Image (tube, rainbow, N blue to C red; front, side, top):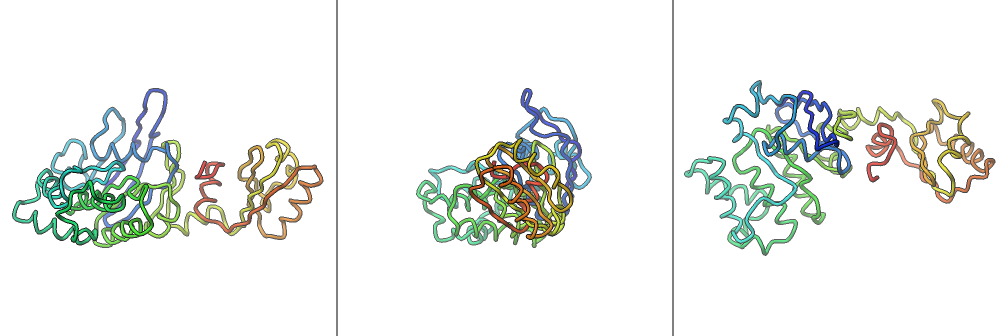
Length: 309
């Protein structure tokens, strides 16, 4: 349905997208996971048509997305920043934006009522949006993107800064939209959101996709190994040197910095040997955490740093 090839965008010397390529099928919910600055918002802005001066191609059902204006109304956009008028009520916002999307007048009011019910705002339809909570505003933002029944929905960090209940509501909407046949690209840096919402996950950093697949496929990148995070008072070089002759299939150094390092070990029985080696080299350890592989450890394996960094 959507095919992106070698999309490249720079801001001066900073490369935001670096030969980015991606395919998306009808009804697929793709979670684009990466830290701030990974290029996620730049990608959404280009697909939405609000950012120019890039290279590469984007086709939608075999047609150039940017030269065929008829395709614009088949895309729904939920930006990270709120895109509505605070002084209008929820219903009037939907009627205004629906008109811009060329929703037929005879269908617009009925569709607005339906979508307000979907996002659980039916009882607040006539209330000025400026009175809404942050979660309600996020749900209205999502409603506007869905109003015209798009074939492709783009959501850029749609759950930023909202309470848990509102977040759960929006993630449920995203799942249901995908199940109904709409293709979805959903950007986030929240691990739990993509695990529970997306049919496919793409891990992104520095403008490129590092790996993609289902949750289980991505976990296999790390393998069935425990991840050990060690904190203490040590230099990165000293830590690496202490474990140099232990490194291999059984003990893999994933990342190391002053005072913090992460290892992948084939079994928990290797951990006491690692600790003995550190103590022999007089490296002070203040904390040790053991966890099973997850998306955080996949990101760590691919980039050498935590998604939180």
